[in-house]
Image 1 (cartoon, rainbow, N blue to C red):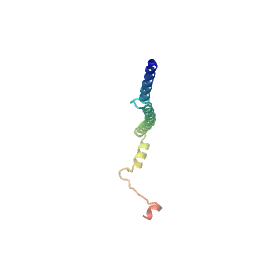
Image 2: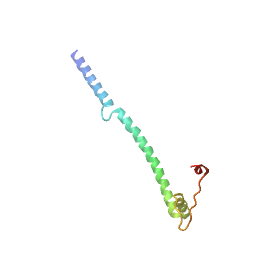
Image 3: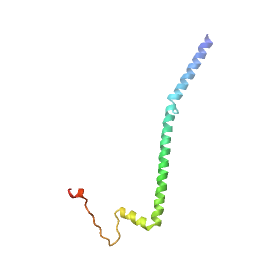
Image 4: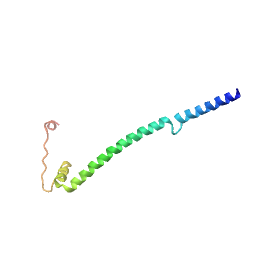
Length: 97
């Protein structure tokens, strides 16, 4: 009878330890799931950033090698050549303001 109580007590202690480790420990099941989710999000963000880096490197090479693309980009940013005149036109929507 005493052996049975000791055995049950040991099983209860082991069960409590497993529950504690599974749910409340710093490496609990829920925290591991949360970390995995964050890891996947960061991995996806890294892939997106790598694609953006490749695009920007290509754009950088194009700007260095092709003067037409460089001038087009400069004009998009509002730059003009020396001696050029700028004419700005208002659209129909802007005339009323």
